[in-house]
Image (spheres, rainbow, N blue to C red):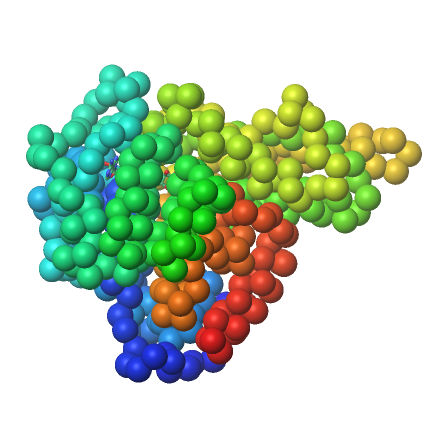
Length: 375
Ligand SMILES: NC(=O)c1ccc[n+]([C@@H]2O[C@H](COP(=O)([O-])OP(=O)(O)OC[C@H]3O[C@@H](n4cnc5c(N)ncnc54)[C@H](O)[C@@H]3O)[C@@H](O)[C@H]2O)c1
């Protein structure tokens, strides 16, 4: 765990991080539970950073939440996180009662058509309510950071939340593979408004991407030449159900493939690399299984290979990384640092503007936090 020296915020009294959440699905559930799990600092086990700048986990206060599902909209946040079709593990009970209800967001392209042929208990059921004005809600609740947990493929919806953040002067942490922070035009718009943006597509703490990247880098460092690789992922949560609709996956595939290709000296031809969500297996719920295979050529042109299977609880695996990205966004906000946060994004996201190795990303984020604290 990275322990950063405690320093008081430079501009007067330390603020709370006023967090808004877009998409109260499994990732949001793990994040909300995590805030409680680490409350009071009685344990730091499982955390990447105990403190970032002046911010401990207890300094995050949820002030707004948006969703479109009839079982979540209008309900208190602590109830909505465990409403169907959410299936993330409950790791703290009872969860804190936040004094807020989930508000209706704009549906746009948030729902996959294919998912609507599945039982209601497994899919989104759109509420009849009219969408609130997101920017207005962000202003009213004085949110400072919005974390985006919308389904893969919801480009128009993600852009609508990004626009609302620009309008309401709110920093944007984009955990989904719709390119905002890594898109030059969007990054420039955030910079112009002096607002930090972190993205895109959250990395897990130790997930399929991290393991795959580490192994590919190992091969490169040892002079072995990868010849082909696949990473097949299956799971039983709504994220995997949504990803059955292949056209929604375009940016997810780019994000995951680039994250791995960036770790080897000679990138593989596209026909020799296959990475992506591969099937939906409902009884797995939030457990993700990753099947990974790498073949390479070593000394003397001899071919060798490796196969492994990784099992992780999907949503808690990325919640700690999101909590770090949120605290970095707030620190940047405090210090007047706007635009895409490069070091923060390459540490926490699969598709940042610049790909580096995970160990380099760790060093860069540590340096960035130290420097930001001194601004
Ligand atoms: N380890 C991880 O879990 C991980 C890693 C990388 C990326 N992600 C990405 O994070 C995102 C969230 O994942 P999840 O497992 O929480 O998904 P989820 O399907 O459980 O949650 C998505 C939520 O968004 C809501 N929603 C849909 N359209 C909306 C709209 N227009 N406005 C507001 N809410 C809307 C849904 O009702 C649902 O509650 C996904 O895009 C996923 O790919 C997750």
